[in-house]
Image (cartoon, rainbow over all chains, first blue to last red):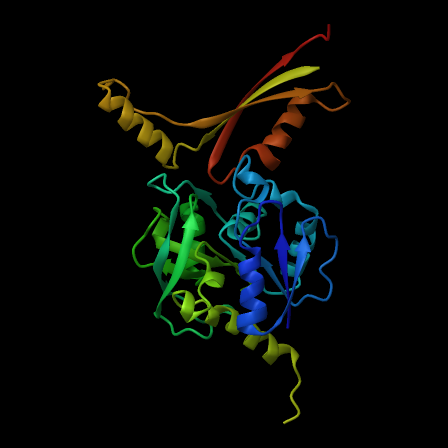
Length: 228
Length: 84
């Protein structure tokens, strides 16, 4: 499986993402610059964390109009897995691929620490390797992760089982403890915690690895013909 | 040409953590009459005259980029200025 890591000016978790895929997962991965006009040949799209365009105006607001985003939207519409982490999640919200918006953290502080997450829905291409209700430890690092959506949208998220991860101890004021949501079609996931920073026991834990393994497993089952 | 002032604020229904913190600071300075603070953004745009209605252009740029309708409201003032 071949992944693209989209690099915006100001992305700073792109190398962690690349490392997670190449060295820990053992899959193919390439960096794709924000002005690229094709994502052909890629099976999965990863939008990394950071401060794209200096977080000017609003986090993710400028990145949303970069050239490559047209292709990311096409890939999402074609059903390819699209994962946005942290600033990547903010870009997905701004581009309308996921509903809602981010507010400043309730404490107004940038928070960087491991957090306990509950897997609310393990019936997705990003979470099938986890158990439902499993509590995992994944680091967060953000100043604007306080998820918000209106009541109607929240009802839809709940009804369609689109809330994939919640915080055990809400660090930022996020609505309903939401840490990660998926689109209705089930192929676009946005999450504030950084699974790519939790892929090696030596560095404090590997609970994020199952997320990437879930993507690969799903893709193999759908695309690789086995001669059994 | 037009000088346009755009004010973007969090919607009334959305809690503004920055505004709440500033309000608490003002109250700790004994300005107890300050009952609410909402923090927003102020932008100045210069728009050249074109065949398009300037108000339509302003609304469009606010909706598409300057404000996020999920959490923000905006208002604007348009003033026509004659170039010197």
